[in-house]
Structures are given as structure tokens and as C-alpha cells.
Amino acid sequence: MKYLYIQTFGCQMNFHDSDQMAALLERSGYRITDDLAASDLVIINTCSVREKAEQKAHSFMGRLGKLKRERRVIIGIAGCLAQQWGKEFLARIPHLDFVLGTHNIHRLPEIVEEIEKSGTRVAETSFHEKVKSLEIYTPSRNGHVTSCVTIMQGCNNFCSFCIVPHLRGREESRPSGHIVDEIRRLAASGIREVMLLGQNVNSYGNTLAGSPGFPELLAMINDIEGVERIRFTTSHPKDLSEDLMKCFGSLEKLCEHIHLPVQSGSDRVLTRMNRRYTSEEYLEKVRTLRAYCPGISISSDIIVGFPGEEEEDFQKTIDLMEKVIFDTSFSFKYSARPGIVAQEFEGRVDEKTKSRRLSLLQAVQERHTLQVNRSLVGGIVDVLVESVSRNDAFEITGRSRSHKIVNFSGDSSSIGRIVPVRITAAFAHSLRGERESGREVTQC
Ligand code: 5AD
Ligand code: SF4
Image 1 (cartoon, rainbow, N blue to C red):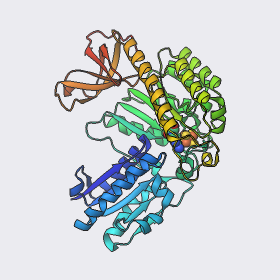
Image 2 (tube, helix red, strand yellow):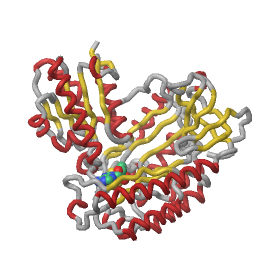
Image 3 (cartoon, rainbow, N blue to C red):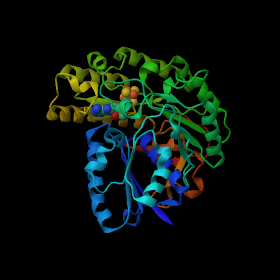
Image 4 (tube, rainbow, N blue to C red):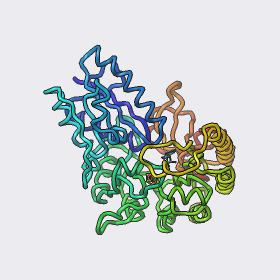
């Protein structure tokens, strides 16, 4: 038996890519391990959206030099950083055996086999018009009740701060029939919830002649027996159509949560970011969403310290947050990335200002999250039970339809079931509750 250790940095998309790599290599006799010292093959799946993720990958890579000196082990780098630096990595890092770009996951088994046989070093970063990895089936992991399904890859938007389109290539949608087949297989294997993945799922189908659009795809998935819940990420606000917003009120399996990154509340900054919507247009979409689906949970990504962001621009972001009241948000200091358009912009914001703005913004978000969570106390929510708590065999955890973590008493027999829970306490990152015998659900 050979053992594979994968270290993943970055977003859900990357974690799903790692699952695909593990699934492919399993067919070549590799079993996944969480013991680095026992591994025969180590893959670092990297992200280059922000500098911090890049630094973490480099420091992990540095530690592997010692492992390579001690024993025979194959070491590879995958993901966005691999795409960005290609064979330069082989020159810079002597203990590295292969570099695998974002369009080449499907080639992983043959690359590993070649290295096992001949010890050659390989860098494969070519872009393909049809990305074969879209079709790699990832079986549900033992005991898991939710699974990610890629519906498209790449991005055509070119937000000026973002390196993704440069490293993941142009947008490509996967045929709807393939997506439906995969979800049927997952449902038959016990998966209850699917998370549909794409850089901008709202433009699903645009690049495929005759393809259904995203709302139609959701309706097709809604009809699949065995699937109880549907989620998706990420949505670009400019492409959020009225038809899609209506789905939240009409498709019973579509969960009442949308991740809708606003990035900034200042129109001046939004224009420079090339986001192609104004703050008022964003607010209007939020109002429409709430009209179709009262109580829908809305989360966001926000960047502070974008080049040229003045104090009053930042204040506009806070004002927008006060109007929307996001359930949660992920906030970041602008991170300089080589090759992105924003690097050419004037008005670099200093690190101290960025840190101050970030802390202020996060304090506002914490207040809002608590406010939303407290409003749920006393109500009943449906919880899809995902696992038993690590520290207590009689404590179980799952998520409400609005994607909130809910902890309550129970045991492993509830895993995979949807259980009504009365919320008794609210915290910043989770809710506590008690199993309710009645079926009447009052909130999402
Ligand atoms: N600096 C900071 N944050 C960024 N993001 C993308 N690029 C950058 C950057 N250069 C954030 C955006 C995006 C999320 C995935 O990462 O908010 O929505
Ligand atoms: Fe990046 Fe913008 Fe595409 Fe999202 S929509 S991946 S932020 S370029």
C-alpha cells in the first residue's frame, strides 16, 4: 500500500480539486493519510489569491526538504501557484518532483507513474480548451452527508484585484446532463446535500450552446430523488437575475442562503475594481432577494485598502453593511498580486490603515452576526446532522438551511437526518438548540 498526503490551501474549489486528486490516485493504489511522516507522495495544493496563502504554501514546501533527505518520497505542487510559476518551481526547489497546473488534474496518475518509474521531474501547466478535470467523479467520503459538485470552471470577469482568471483560464460550463448524472450517483451513495461550485455560477451555461441557464439547472437538480438540499457558490451580483432570485422562493430544496460578495460599498472603488454594479444596484438585489425569500441568509466578501480607497470610501462600505446586515462576511486586506490590473493603480494604502479598517469592519460584522443569530433564539430550524462532536459522543452538529452551525444533544444515529431543533442560545459562530418533537419549522 502507498500513502498520499495532501496539504490544501485556499478555497472550497481547491479542497474539491484535492478530493479529485485523491480519488484519481486511489485508482493507482494510493490511500490518503494524515500522517506526513508515513507518506510516499505529498501534494501541496496551493492558492495565490492572497499573499498569506502563498506564504503558507512556501513555508510548508520548505519543511518538506528534510523529509525528502530522510526517505524516498515524491513531492508535487498543484493549484494556482503551480500554474503561475510552472517549471521555474523545479529550478528553485530541488526537492520538488512535479508541478501540476490547474487544467491538468486528470494527468496526475500518469505523471506520478512516470516519476515512480524513471525519477524524471515534470512540469505540466498547459491550458486546454476543454478542462477534463470537470468530469472527474469524486465519490462521497465515508460518513459525509454533503458533497461539492463542480458545474463550471474558470472566470471571464477580470475583477482588477483578482488573479483567478489569469490562473484558472476562461469560463467553461459543464454539460447539465453530466452534472445531473453525478448528483444522482452521489445521492444513491448517501449524499443528502450538494454544493454546486463555480467562480460565478450565475453565468452557468453561457459558454455552452443550447445549455440550460443556472435557474433551469437548479430546477433539474431539485427533481433528483434523494437530494434534500442544494447550495451554490459563488454568485457575482451583476449576474444575479430575477429568475434566479425567484428560485429561492419556489424550489423547495434550494437552501435559503446566498454568498454574494460585494467587495466594497463605494461606487468609486467598485468601478476601479471592475465589478460592474453600483452599491445601490447591489442593495436593490438584496431587497428583491428578501422580497422573494424573507429571512434569506446573505454572506459576503469584502476587501479593505484597495488602491486609492479613501476614508470616505471605507465609510461607505460600513454604511452598506449597516443597510444589508450580512449574516457573515469574509474580509481581507487588499493583497498585491503580480500581474493583476490593480497593481498599476495609484494610491497604495499603508499596512497600518488596512489593519485598522479591517478590525473596524470585523467588529461591525461580529455585531451583525450576533444580532441575526439572536433573532433565531426561540424558533425552530431544520438541521441536517453532519457529525458527532469531537469531544463528546452525545453532542451532534449540523447546519440549518441558512448555513448556520447548530449544536445539540444526540448521537451518531442522527447523521444524515434532517432534525427539527429549537434554538436556545446564539453565539458569534454557532447556535445551540434542543431537538424538537413537533415538525413545525418557523425559521430557515
Ligand atoms: N486581495 C485581497 N482579497 C482578494 N480577493 C481576491 N483577490 C484579492 C486580493 N488581491 C478576495 C475577494 C474574493 C475572495 C475569494 O478573495 O474578496 O471574493
Ligand atoms: Fe475573481 Fe471576479 Fe472572477 Fe470572482 S468574479 S473569480 S473575484 S475575477
